Picture 1 (cartoon, rainbow, N blue to C red):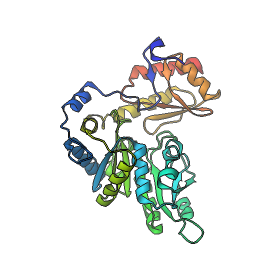
Picture 2: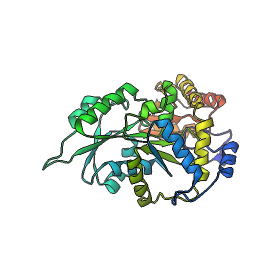
Picture 3: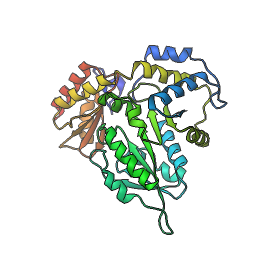
Picture 4: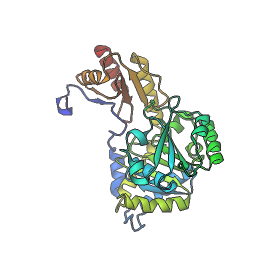
Length: 340
């Protein structure tokens, strides 16, 4: 495997939008942040971040988490009783990248649903929602992902979310949004974040992807739900102390890095236009179909100082972010031309 030190050109790191480094200005904001003990409830910068995200999402309250996985699993545990069933799209993050946590922590049965690039047919949800009886579990929660990672950063439109809300209300189900990249969806659609979060009972929003912070996610919902979530966060080891340093990075990101997500989308579109086999992206994730095994293509691209991930036997994922420039896009297109 080629390392950064062995690279002959600047690395174009398209593995994920989680690889970003905080800017000098973001670091300065972190250094200057007023701090307290967050577990004891007196870190003012954490409170400021939670108020800001609560307002952006149209939710009553918010809670800062070290990771999106912990936020998602806390939401599932709070919404469900042990032995309940949840409905999740078949390639969702909570299935692929959270290490079986719904079964371990919440003790729930997970039923997966097919979709059209991450958009589930509401009738499929209706048919799979079961009422509890002597033989079967209650279906108590629908988890959705927007944008959808494994489907290439695809967007679930606001009108579709309202259809899901109607189905869930009909069946007495809660709705949770894995909104790790909901910022991208809002920018791409030109809508307020709250238009994508308000149909839900809860939502998690990641700060360490396109928003460019070192860590952190925020869980939002009703005030009583957030108080219950605070206990679950502590139970899962998420009680943190002088967390205001990281909350300050989140506040900086909301001010400075939110609107610029449109640049990532434009560069993703340019990448897709120049690479054979690429899907047209809706946001900042480009999926590329390969004839040769994707892992082999990935290794060959590394020899040209372009890094990405295989996500299926014949599929690569490229993710643009705040460190990717126009020259990086050109270098990547040239690398694909040489390899393919």
